[in-house]
Amino acid sequence: MNVKKSFLIELERETNNTGRILDRITDDHLDWRPHEKSMSVRELSTHIVDLHSWISKAIPEDVFDLKTDFQPLKIDSVSELKAILTKGLVDNKETIAQLPDDDWLKEWVLKAGDWEIARLPKGGAIRHIITNHIIHHRGQLTVYLRLLNIPVPGLYGPSADE
Image: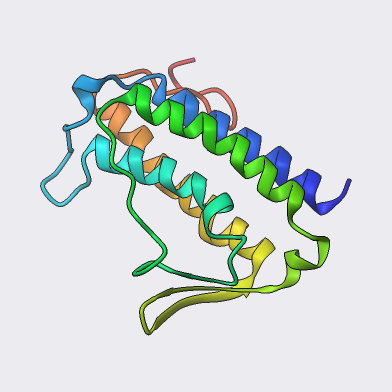
């Protein structure tokens, strides 16, 4: 198995896991938040889906500047989020397939204006900046499901609801 195949397997599994959570929420849940300092379901789920798209939007670049290269996703419905996630998977697969082998170790920089947030190989950026970030926020979203009394899907094995 090569590096691309490994990332493609992980990409598909993580995208499917996000889709399984989106399948549990409805438009009526979008404005709910567990605490005034917390993101709403809309903000959190949108952030997660947005992060999925970073493989095709950010990784092909050598430097990704949040101040100039990033436009936060805005949605009106869960169905819109699901469609964006589905299209994003296609775009991400194409990006990974087209990424030259030597680019996996090529330096990638995430910054916000003059502030350098991270500097690491592109392969590491996919895992550390994107995938781990998605998993972290998706975990938060599963807590939201629990607080809303929505059955939580098992993502890496059965949940208490399965």
